[in-house]
Length: 279
Image (cartoon, rainbow, N blue to C red; front, side, top):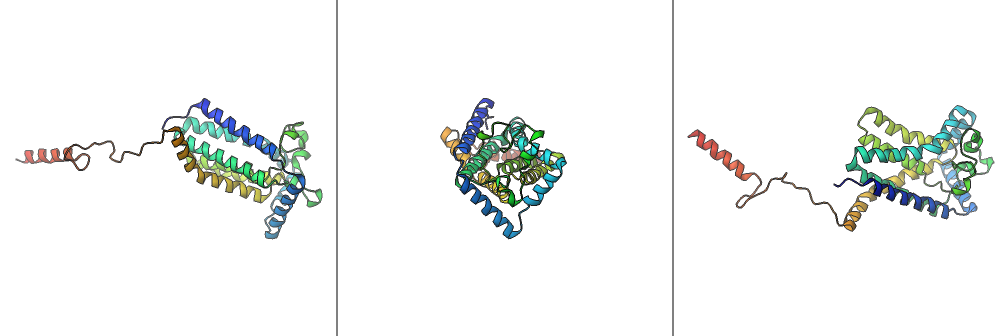
């Protein structure tokens, strides 16, 4: 397989990310429906006793030593770790890179569909009576963000605060974790592959940016993207006219006239030589 060209990959990733970011801004949804969806998710979690975001959010608010690092993690890690894994795969695992990149892109675009169909108010933007504190706003003096999601202070208008379902923070972290587990090669890398998505899930709930079901949906979106990846790669191969040739099952041996299997002649010669030596 031909190694991907770095400049073509960078351009492709830039185009997809720009489309994703622009799409998020265009599908903001109205506040009333977003709040309704958020409350419906919260009531469903309460019904089944899985509303873990409430106690986590109280803990992060009451203990700055947890809340402030969590805010930094929420605001930055997905912008740093995800590209770092892409670069690592490109350089160290080029045979795995194209499939991993396609998986990430497909899942991200599926997430955009979710934002379009189900604009959702995150816990931090619900009425305070529901018991949530926006830790990003509460601890904003310690970071570069303001009171509007993780956007830099003064640029909150450039983000869609109702793009909560699914949580691509969790989805991208799961993508990173799977690749670290499969291709990391060391126990430390595998441990990080397990810890990173779990930590991200705790962070997005503790900061009141996502519900537990947002995190579940983020994982489901990544699963759907993984299932679609082989089909997308085959389609891309046909469009490029460079579909891979079938593997050579003979191991590179060739048959000649009168031979039924590769290597038959060499076997015959060996038998003749043995017979001659016996005489």
